[in-house]
Image 1 (cartoon, rainbow, N blue to C red):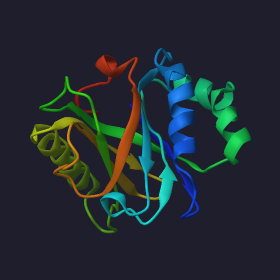
Image 2: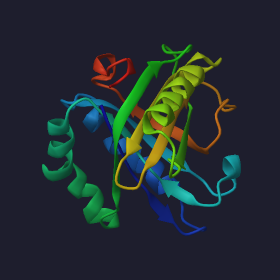
Image 3: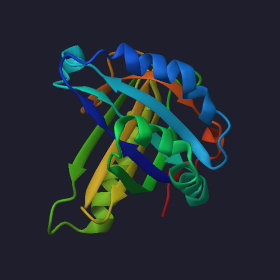
Length: 194
């Protein structure tokens, strides 16, 4: 499993209905994308759920590198680049994925928390703790799914969860889920991935 996310941050007075309309118009295009586990089309609005910014920040869990590369280099990503400029696309290697207690429910919000892996810690212990946290989150009431991945260049963990209600039991940045494309969700490897 591979995680990918990019962020487009807009001015405080930006009309976020433009992003909602864009997702409503083209969000379905990845509903059958080969190699994609899931893409959550995420939006934050300044002032909602404590957000300081207006932001569009899709989050992906990929089953295959080939599917991710075909998306990035094969033209699908180019449409976003043409409309908004080329964002930094962050990538993480998957550590764990768990279906949540509310796995069959529609996701309304997502939580993303990035945290550094401190210098001097035993890496296997830090990764095992992140995996345990994923299992704990997935077991919470209202959790649709939970995942964790690591960036070994910057030594950063990213915790990601989807929730059926707007009061998630996870710390981090809260996003509204506009659409969920999940053509390969059932093929995402469950549990610890090492």
